[in-house]
Length: 120
Image 1 (spheres, one colour):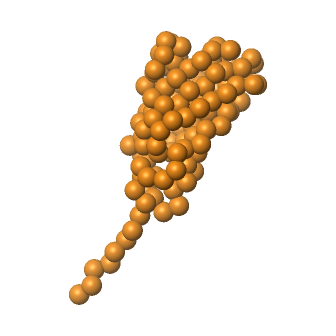
Image 2 (cartoon, one colour):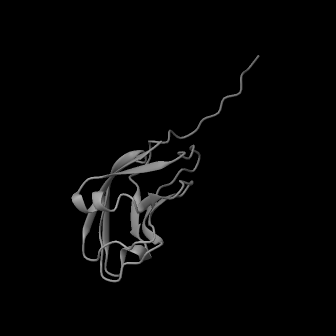
């Protein structure tokens, strides 16, 4: 009796995630990411004209055959990130990645924010 075998990508494997700026970070903002699909550090320096109720960062990955994590959390790595911890939240992960969003209070302009992320 042969048993069926299923092969999936391990969620933490693959290439380093990509990061791009959303409208909530303002014009001229910059971002970096260091880590894996499961954990690492994401940083953004906002530009002028930040926006409330908008996406600050888009974190992209490729999970062609893997299981999507159930959630991603952020932990502040600097004082600016800690000060906005009640207004920053992540979007639900999908096969293409996840987002960092800001609530009703826009981020301060021309400020550097850094978070550790953990996806589970």
